[in-house]
Image (cartoon, rainbow, N blue to C red; front, top):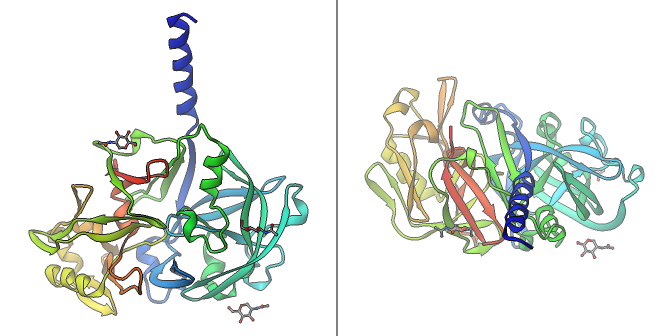
Length: 378
Ligand SMILES: *[C@@H]1O[C@H](CO)[C@@H](O)[C@H](O)[C@H]1NC(C)=O
Ligand SMILES: *[C@@H]1O[C@H](CO)[C@@H](O)[C@H](O)[C@H]1NC(C)=O
Ligand SMILES: *[C@@H]1O[C@H](CO)[C@@H](O)[C@H](O)[C@H]1NC(C)=O
């Protein structure tokens, strides 16, 4: 082969690689400010810890969600893309009153369905969700995963009215296989196994508070989402997308100056940290506690609030007052950092949810066991 032909072949490969990126449009559920209102029905998210589901007092109603389809011919669902869990679940045809307003998966209408039957249970803040595992093809944008084990939910009554009014039907977990409730391999991990040439990354770009549409890219990184260079941060565990931050400062005051465990979690709206430390942050910025771990600030003060910085991967990631305060029509301004003490073995863990992610574009890199961060291009 001549050198010229080799060059052409390499160029062709690069074109294929670029076009292999799969884009999933994400829509926002309730605006966060609205979801935080006390009178709003709520679904409180949980994190899997060992064999238990620990309730994080944070809302799934405000999550970003997008399309997925299951079966042959394809049956469509809207799911929350959640980097803090590892299972896929959607409502079953046999799910009764609690799924009445939802599209429901009909296995008898799918030629690729294979029964499994393993019981599936997840406890959310508002109650349990139960069903059984099944096996079918799953389509994610233009990508297809065969033999995917997922749960059909037969009883979602534990989620109450909030589930009926939520614009999404189920949850697709994007964390590591080790925290999969039934041991079923998560969708993304089956996808990369079945597509060995695919780049083993996905990334999430959430819009700022005023925007409604986000994007998840699979199998490639689109430089249009961010500014500057991506900063590599090695994972410390392959459970959630877990690593550490070196310090946390409010203005010029160091609040945390030792290496501290954190996860980047698209399924949590706020930033969540230990109660005593969040209380120190609140004191620094003059916030008032309104419920355990939840704080408000004067809306008039927001432009003058100090910057909060997390040092991750040797870089200070700065959030300004308008980034970390959720302004509900200038009536109430809620601190987007909530205090909560998590049990062993995740005591002291911070959860960097959407309040962090809408400022910081995140690449979830399975191949190199790292997250890669850069400021979002606004
Ligand atoms: C559905 O789950 C709820 C708990 O959230 C339980 O009280 C109820 O009995 C279950 N319904 C059925 C039909 O199993
Ligand atoms: C059901 O799925 C689980 C998780 O992938 C697997 O371990 C189990 O063998 C499957 N059971 C059947 C009966 O196919
Ligand atoms: C970050 O990780 C990517 C993917 O492994 C690698 O190509 C790049 O060289 C790394 N950057 C630095 C500065 O180490």
